[in-house]
Amino acid sequence: MSLAALRVMVVEDHGFQRRMALRLLADLGIGQVQEAAEGAAALHVLETASSPPDVILVDLDMPGMDGIEFIGHVAQRRLARAVALVSALDPALLNTVQMMARAYGLYVLGSIEKPLSIEKLEDLLTRYEEHLLEVEKDDHVDVDLVDLRRALREGEIVPWFQPQAEFSNGKVVGVEALARWERDGLVIRPQHFVHLLEADGLATELTDVILEGALRWKRRWQDDGMRLNLSVNVSPATLHDPGAADRYQQMVESHGLSPSEVVLEVTESQLMADAALGLGVLARLRLKGFGLSIDDFGTGYSSLAQLSQVPFTELKIDQGFVFGAHAQSRKRAVVEASLDLARKLQLETVAEGVEAVEDWQMLAELGCGIAQGYLVGMPVAAEDLAESVRRWRAPH
Image (tube, rainbow, N blue to C red; front, side, top):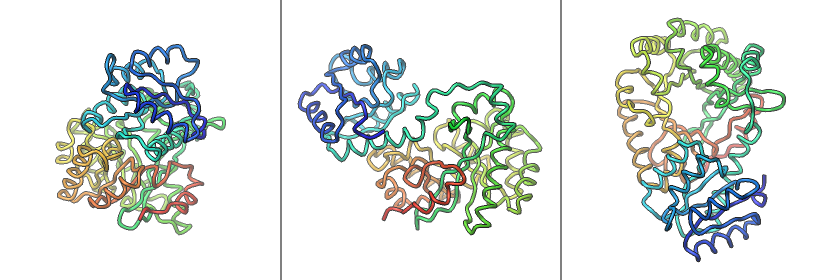
């Protein structure tokens, strides 16, 4: 989808600001534009429209129904595909509203500060285009459990890979393996099927399939002269499996690789179900040389406790804190504190969600180790990774 094909709604009570937004959108070639001066009027337009807009640009501080209440209605009733905040209000408030919208399942492009400019709008809407590349093909996919079991058994669920680059020199040094279901020409993302496999007791099998496939490709790349560390997410069920450490060691070594080249990513919430067994499995994995990463750091309720209990080697800062941190002082403070903590604990650091050059530059200045995100590269099929790495050019 090109920018000109986007459908955009502007919800802004200030007449001049609204007309300015409409003019800038026209300058970008966007002709399908709706407008409203406050939330209730915007809802009426949306409810009577034949199709939802792609993006709503919304102010928060409006008379009548304010932007926060409006976004809540939009998200719960699926009246738009994405939303972006246009406001000069407190960054902490803007961040809270974005988190609320995401919790409802609405895609949030971020916030842009007034006054609007054509550069700000183009950057924002281009971000939506990139998001569509990732989601549009499987947006309305139906998943049948019987078909899903067959897919896992017959090798249709495979690892895709997202590159990770060092901030210090821009070199791609690793990849994260991410599950994808390649079905009938479609590529189905994990949020559509992983929870079904977990509920069906197949989470351990999924982890094994992705790890085995990723190790096979790592060996192949290494033989071709491209040496990359490998990160793989492990399911919660893995932490309840006493045999996981031995099995993973055997899988790695069967490909002539070392556990020290593999990082296993664990989210904070996974450790809470059975702490004693989970800690034992993680300790054995670390004993065998695997790296351990605490994924989505800062999104759970026990981050510091987990860091004190588990022999982690890497801290992964969640994309919710990274994205746009260069322009939001509170996000930057969280990132800075996380990096400082990691340094004191002698942990490697990875920032997820690096999409803007400004965020790259900020993270580099703060001493973060590795970047992962659309700026470096989107997740790609294994056979396309080498070309993705060749295309990457680090920002100066």
